[in-house]
Structures are given as C-alpha cells and as structure tokens.
Length: 469
Ligand code: PMP
Image (cartoon, rainbow, N blue to C red; front, side, top):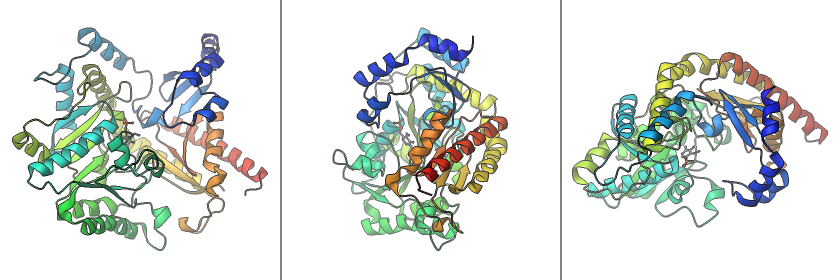
C-alpha cells in the first residue's frame, strides 16, 4: 500500500477542516478566506518532504517556517526528547536552580559562537529573545550611568517577532497598523534593498549609502540617546533581502564610532542557514547580542534565546544584581535536549560546511539560472535562502524591470501553482522565496528547480490568458 493510500484511510480531511475553521485561530490569517478554502492538513514529514491528509507529497522549500534545518523525521531527536521527558520533563531555572541539558547547551553555544560570546539567556521563541534584547540593552545603559540611551534603531520591513516589543522592533507596516505600535523608543530606517532603492548606484555604492542612513539617524537623535541597532544579517520574512557586501562592515564601523550596541537577529540566519554557524560571521560583523531560535532545535521543540556578548554580560553580571526578566520555559530541559541532539547532527553530518562549500554554491548557480524565465526579473541567493522577483517586463538592469500592480496579486497566484504542484515556495508581494532544509542534496536541488520552473510556466500561461502580460 502506498503511503498516500494509507494517509487517505487515516484522515477525514473535510472533518478536520471543519473543526479547524470552527475553533482554531491561526497566526497571520484571514479566517473568512481560510474557511472558504479549508486549511491544508499536514500529517507527516521525512527529510525535505511533507505529506498532507490527502496523501499528497510536497517538497518543503521553506523548512517549515525557516526552521527544520536537519529535515523531518530525525528519530535521534525524538529519542533524546523522550529520554529527557522520562528523566526530568521540566524544572525552572529561577531560584538558583538549573538543569543538565540547559547547562550543556549553554556551554556548547558558547563554543560554536564568535569569541565575544560567553553567556546565553534562554527563551521559548525568537520574539521573546527580542523582548529580552530590548530590556537587556536598556538595562545595560542604565547600569553604565547613561539612562538616556534608550532608543533602539531598526529597519522598515524587518521582522523581529510578534510580541509587543518584537513587532515594534520589526518594521512591518501591517503589524504597526494594529494596536498602536510601535511602542515608544523604537525608530526605523530604510532597508538595504538594492532592487527597490539602488537605482543609479553600483551594489557596493548602495550598501554604503544604506548604512549611512543609520549614521544619519544616530546624528539626528543624538548618539547619547541611542541604545542599539538591530538587524537581520539577511532579512528573511521581508523577502530575503540580501544586502550588498559593503553594508554590514559599514554598519559595524558606525556602531563602533558612536558606541551603539549591535544586535544581530539570527533567528533565521543562525545554525547554518547561510553556510556559516552564524550569519554575522559571513557578514563580517561583531554583534554584542545575537537572537536565535528556529534552527537551534530545527523546530522540533520550541526554543529561542539571546547570546550575550562580554560587553553586555560583564556589566549585567558585575553591577546588575537581579535582572528582573525571564520565562517559565527559559532553559526548558526537553527543548535543550532537542537542541543538543540537533546540533550534534549538524556537526556530525557537516551540514554547515556542506551548505558553504557544496550545496549552497550549487543552489546559487541553479537558482540564478531561473533568471532566463520571461517572468523573472532578478534571482539571487545566499547559502540556503533565495528569492526571485516576478516582473511584467524585464529590463537591462534590475531597476528597469516593470513590476505588476500590487493589487493583481501575482505572487499569490504563483504561490497557488507551487502549492498545487507539491512545492512550497512563499510569496512576499511578487518576490518568491525559499529556505530549504540544509540536508537537501544536489539531486533534490535539481528536482526543486524543475518544479519551480514548471510552476513559473504555469503562472506565465495564466497571466497571459488574463491579458496581464
Ligand atoms: N526574528 C526573526 C528574524 C524571525 O524571522 C522570526 C520568525 N520568523 C522571529 C524573530 C520571531 O520568532 P518566533 O516566531 O519564534 O517568535
């Protein structure tokens, strides 16, 4: 019996969809729209593939939500989790107590991270990690005798989570429009999006210009008011915006010059996603704080946190007394056990090196080859994240491409063909993005590129039939 047939016998999709729309409020979802269609019910995963309740096999080009770095179905992680649950399913790290997996994981993270990191603060998610950052940098400056240094500079279109601090630090207009955000003390500058804002400049010139927006903002506010700058090494949810090579080194120079703390949000970029343990290493920066989540457990169990660099940790520890902050699940033993086994897999299978030296460069070449498609204006990648822009008409340079009207929703049409043909690729406006599991082989990259090209053809035919091309 094929897997598909087994799944069909086991699940009543319509009944699940009915219960789902009756009771389950999904994140970032229009529920009227969802109720009309019915949710897709995912039931199983193995390697880079998923199966839904109809028995359909799907290639997961997004690693779940940028997180399943070691792929689905890793029995050794489930076994590690089971053993930990049997031994000690929970204990907190308040009141001068600790637990074995949390201690071991903190030490391992320190070993794997850049040399300025010797401490870890655990949370349950990336959002909570960024809430921790906000409180920690403000506390740091209070302890330094500079209580005025409270403002955090972030970027438009950044994603730093969905809690009040996380969504305020983020730069998503749609999120700020609901519920009176951002909270005070957070300001935003432009993102280093060459396609959108770099007309008339080389990429390198644009990288310096975009970093200059930070300097201008610091001078406008007064450096004595600025606590920190936060950014994703490569912006993920905003559409895989890969900055020019000149951008981050100039950001580092500016932060150094004005004494501003640098926070790298590596919730997506960490744990091998860009072909380095941390994206900061690839971008040539020395952040004071690194937010992590997702890839630390490959999403098998929720876990996040902050790597705290010596500049901040020394002050907090030596002068700070109690830092009045923490979560029930900070250092959750089961989550830490999952992370330890996940990182063992990344190390033993040399997956970070594989992405850096072999499959990452191969993906780059194969993904760039999609730029010959009539719908594709621009295709680029960095490690195992990649994006392409759907355009109505190509131009000699990227800035001369003619875009579709946003209300035409071409990205969503394309995403529909991808989903319909067993390929998960996400749409951010008309930019189509992927972040595949790091275990993806060269043959699987070929399979994925074939599927993407097939769906681009289908999208093209559809748009031509509508008279939009
Ligand atoms: N920061 C970044 C860069 C992210 O991509 C995300 C999640 N997509 C978050 C923070 C928030 O993480 P979580 O959803 O675990 O709270």
